[in-house]
Image (tube, rainbow, N blue to C red):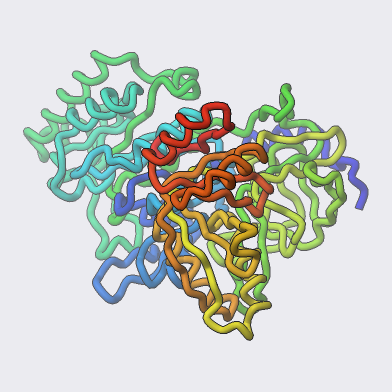
Length: 537
């Protein structure tokens, strides 16, 4: 197929304006996967939500396709869901629900234009939420806030907003306000229309959208009494003391529109979904690594933000998730991989809804395309046609846990090597090698210990090579150079080691703890030791 863009620029711009590409971020157990299901349910992309929380009977949600996710009831990998709502195309990129997988979440946030920050009404702001909000701020991703679980006992609404402003340094602006305290949710009132009240009736197990009833302000006052009066007074207090909603301030990260509801019972979810259409920005020009921008209307460009193998166990294939950044993607087109300058044919391209796939013929800025068995691709790769484009690389997080991997069965060494290579390419862990141990005993470097559980599970069940993981005592990693590696080798320290990262050949110096690192730096201040991105930033 010719690389010449066959779609008019006006159509590319029109299609891009219809796209909303967003992620949901939260602390574990705040209800992120449940909200993902509820959003898809309200968009009629599914007919029944899969978040059933009864013990022993929880079905995996649509976005949780991995067997390990279904077993543990948490999300440990990102998944892409595409569905329509109000003549818009919604690209919801689900993120891991556990702090140990922060690096995967960071990659996802490089591919979205907006994020929904989910907060548990009872627990308020939690550590992982704060970290992920910081990543959004760093990347310039505007944030919509959804205070979840208002149908259960929780904190006071005014206190929650105060915490957001105090701890995150962003002004919360309520778009929706709850009628009734947490645990006694009567319904919701919109800040822009206080003359009507949305009263909800729960649906058993939250499998379908809650029944909504519209009442006038007079009817609400008569039937809800003090709860209605208190809600209006609180809403007026917040709005009178704040700046009010402003789209430019939202996109600049100065304010966050706030919604209340309950994802499990599907209350307030449609208002949130409408807000993504109305408030979230459409795809825009993206900065390039060497300066300048790639405009939305230019020829095709995209960035690989996720690679995943074995999503379809029957075929044992590999899928690279590409966020379309500019132009139009057409299946079968030849694209160039910026890192190598080599051409790649995109014959096998799918859109993905959880583990389900549909062949995609055309995709526009904001869409997520899955390229099947594109073995040359790596996380962070830029693909383009026409004028060269290369987006900034996705930095690696600083690993804090290290373990040597060895096959339990030496006769399965071929499967072992293939599995380790695949996990490295996907970014499940950072794979390090050294002359001391060789390729047959790579070191797995992880942000959190649960990443090792995923490695063990996938090596056994997907690559048929069960492994041993022998933990190492290192806790810190720093990038270094050949001079630094030589200095550490000459020092012959038992509490440090230099290994090569397989993915980019970077040299990493590992230290037992910060005291050993500081001691070496005092002894050799001239040696280059650069911190990686810290997970606590």
